[in-house]
Length: 179
Image (tube, rainbow, N blue to C red; front, top):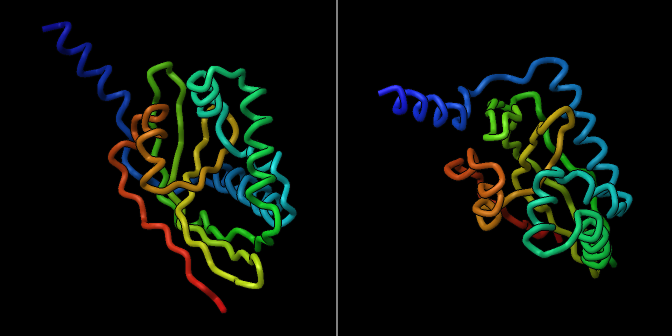
């Protein structure tokens, strides 16, 4: 019976708490992270964009690829630069004010606060403009906020690192031509 109680308690710690609004300090920290991401997007700063990913996720991908975290970060910066070449990006629009946050404790005891934010930005390439709407996972893992543009295809990989994301319903991503 005691073992069952311990297992139940352990299972409950992996579940997200009820949704709640962000407090003032969380809102400020998240807004700063969103502003930094938006500035990096509009200026084409691949290093800053890659730096917006949580270190826990980067370590997971590095181990999976047989690389050090630094080697993976360098490779991702190069890939991001190549993908952004010839494309202009407008500011990221995401409003954390209405976000419903949740708190989760991971198996290693780390407390994570997270929210899914509707987000969009405009991009122009080859004379064609479009608006990309894609949810952003805002994640405070430790003391810093991290941002991940996320779609259903990435969800399974993210859930490997952050199990609470496995069953989260995500808004669909879309691309809307503007001209």
